[in-house]
Amino acid sequence: MTLLKRNSTEKIYSQIANVLRQDISQHYQPGDCLASEFELAERFQVNRHTIRHAIEALIQEGVVERRHGKGTFVLTQPIDYTVAAKTRFTQTLKNLGKTTSMQVRRKVVMPAETGVAQHLALKPRDPVICIETLRLADQQPICVSSHYFPQCHFPDFLELYQTGSLHGFIQQHYGWPLKRIESLVSAVLPQGDDAALLSMPKSQPILRVKSINVNERDGTPLEYALTRFCADRIQLRINL
Image (cartoon, rainbow, N blue to C red; front, side, top):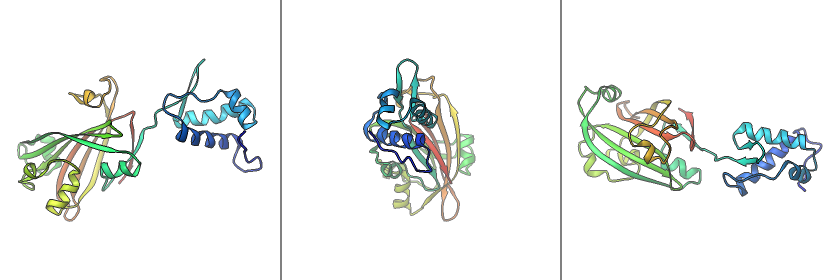
C-alpha cells in the first residue's frame, strides 16, 4: 500500500498521478502495461473513479495511453530538446543523460541556391561549404542536418574539419562564436533518403528547422542549417 497525504491541499488523484509518473520513469519501459485499475485502487486504498482520474491526467500529458479492452500502456517519451541562441546538440543531449554520436555523410563545396544565398548574405551561386550529418541519441537516429557555410569565410574548412561539433570547430580554429538568431519550425513529410536515415516511415511527418547562425561579435551570417528531426522522438523547446 502506498500512503497518501489525506490532509494535504493537493488532490488525492494528483498525488496518485505523481507517484505513477515517478514509477514509470524509474521502472517502466515504453510499451509496458500499468497495473489494472482494481490493483491500483487496492494499492492506494481509493475507489476506481479516483484511479481513473489520475490515469486521465497522465493520458493528457502523453505519458500513457488507454487501449480499450487491454489496459493502460506507457508511451515513448520524446527528448525535450531546447533550441536556444547557443544550443549544441552533443552538450544538450549529454545534459539529459543521453549518449550521442554523429556521422558526417557529405562534405562538398557547391554553388549557393537562391534561398541559401539570401540567408548567408551572398550572391546566388557564390560557393558555399555543405556538411551533411546524421546525429544519434542512445544509438537511435534523431536528426539529419544540412549545414551551409560561406566559403569566403572558411577557405580551408573541408581540409581541417573531420568530425565533431561544427560550432566547436569554428570557435577553436577561427575564433568566431556562433549565435542563433532565427529558427523556423514546420512539419513536413520526409524527402530524399531522410526517412531511411531516420529509420521511420515516409508517411510520418518530421519536424524541419531552418536556422541562421551569425558571428556573435559582428552579426555576420556564418551558417544556414536545415535540420530534420523525428517528430515522435523529440519535442523542441524554443528559447531564443
